[in-house]
Length: 110
Image (cartoon, rainbow, N blue to C red; front, side):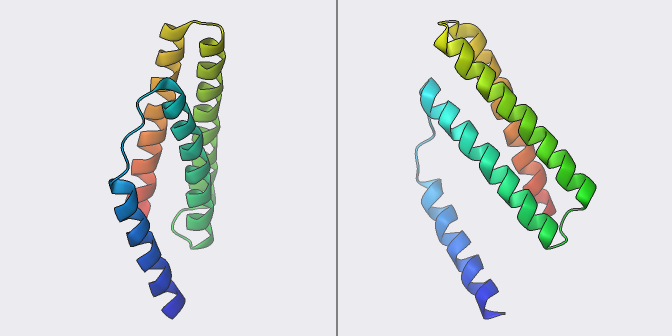
């Protein structure tokens, strides 16, 4: 049980450190944040599945939503590369919204 306590303490420290980090503002920073959130969602879902916090079907659904968010991020990056900033911003906002909802869902399952 000791390793679990250490893990929980590390998570609390990380959470406190992240709370002081300024939110990303530029398009590229928000895009990078989105890609990091996709990876974090996938890793969290895998861990929760291993611990029995979510079912296999829920894990598949999380992975599918992460795939959709990743596709939206890729589209946003592509539109930005073509100079279509309005569409890029829209795609980015949509992808980040999906990721926010996914994060809320996963937090509720912990």
